[in-house]
Image 1 (cartoon, rainbow, N blue to C red):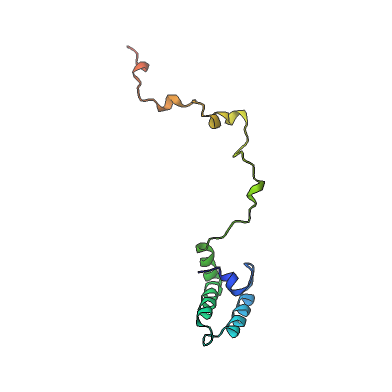
Image 2: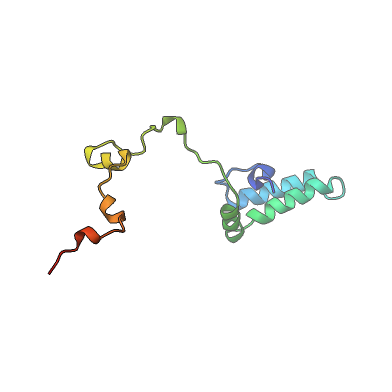
Length: 109
């Protein structure tokens, strides 16, 4: 389904009253006898936004582009401080943890 807010012509911050007014205005403009396809779209959009429960369900199931300007983000994922340098450069500080041969650690008792 398309964006129900766009179909009804309301913003995402619209109140129940504004959604209801937009719905009835569009139903008068596109009655089911004249334009059944458009009426079904309007009806489905209204059903998905008519109350808080259905609106929450719509929020959870509908993908929306984030309101973030990614061009302002830096290319560095985190500060390049010396204590993090081993993570970035792949310093092998934990190579001892990955070994499986411990024969050299044994000693005679």
